Image (cartoon, rainbow, N blue to C red; front, side):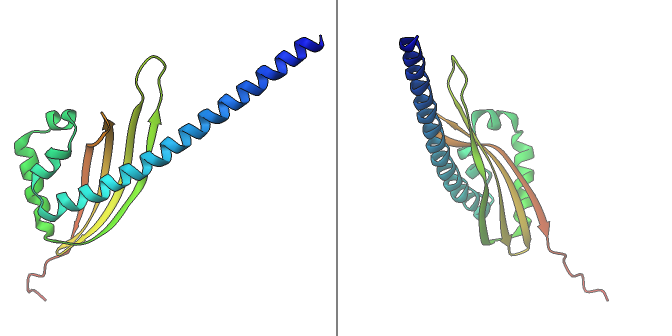
Length: 156
């Protein structure tokens, strides 16, 4: 009986150590993914918003996002956003990454961020979805909520 309890105790210790190692690994991976994805967003949003050229977004987008967007609609979207004018201040992003592990398949790393920026003619809030594929972050969702300043028309 004593031998049985010793074996069970040893197995319990091994399980606890393996769980602790797994949790430590997951936390470190999560922190690294948060840092990487935030840096990507904080570089991508100003690059896209400073010129409002749709090619900037297309170059950073997942193939799925590129395939789902009509080029004419994307051109119209960016033409409307250009009314915001030049980028004055980028406030940075807030969000996090998510790691999903599936047995028998690869893990998936996604991220979701919100960023704010001020422009000559207003402000905008960006909602960005990311996907990490083959070690590279890509934009999988890009939504902009512009807030244009009212224009004065000279009437009293």
